Image 1 (cartoon, rainbow, N blue to C red):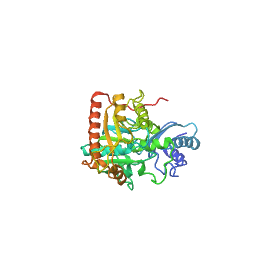
Image 2 (image 1 turned 60 degrees about the vertical axis):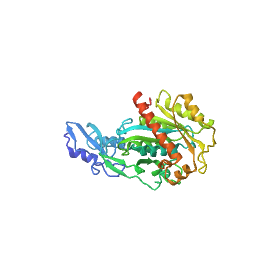
Image 3 (image 1 turned 90 degrees about the vertical axis):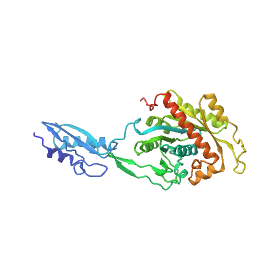
Image 4 (image 1 turned 120 degrees about the vertical axis):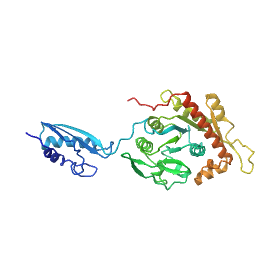
Length: 366
């Protein structure tokens, strides 16, 4: 029996691609590298994305079609190509980003997102290029804090890949899962879906050149943290706590998550949020509502820097709700506290980079 291209293509025309319903020839999925050598046939099938869910089944069907319609004696070798370039592998996703800072807390309600948003703004005010990723998949707050709830990021083709273009506000590049879900509905996702969404926001977005990439992580310790640690080489973690004993106990857990020997992410320091209350009309007065300097004592005990103490001032909440982070106003008490925090984060990051080897991503061993 003599094989020739039309026999092979006629067989492949009997296979439909489930995504479009078209056959492989009609869908232009058969690459023009068809080779026939006696009873050996080799060619490539072209898919839109390297992660196409139908890839394996379509390759199998193509092989079966050739054996059914041509001859079961044909030796078939099928490789796959994709029109869209693959996402870079974990650890190499953000080649133009100098420092990745995870803002974390052992528990919810300590103002971690407020600290992350204002740290990003303060770093930008100091002249750095900054990106902020809202990685709090189940409670995204960045869209509200930056007054960009109606923003809908679009994708643009860059170097053969569809890349999400981050939203820009106050000179900061922003992405949040909140841009892609209905803000009035709870996000009910299984861990795998949430992790995949997060990987897309990191690896399929055009973050470009950044000095600081700030991650607003979910409270506690969860799958999402593991995904971040497996996807990004995190330069250092900033742990947020309030002065209460119960918050400090949870802060310890957060610190342990980053410092255990499988993870090895350096702790840049602690931030004491809600350190005291100062009424606007009595700016000299300090009322310690949640205990005094508990985070400071924890920092001393663990030999990590205290990066800042952020007072409670009515304007923090009001500005957060209005979408104007308080750090924009450098003359306010709280604005100054966040600028001081940003300076300390820069100092500790530079010190960490000078003294320690770069962080590696966490590898899971199956």
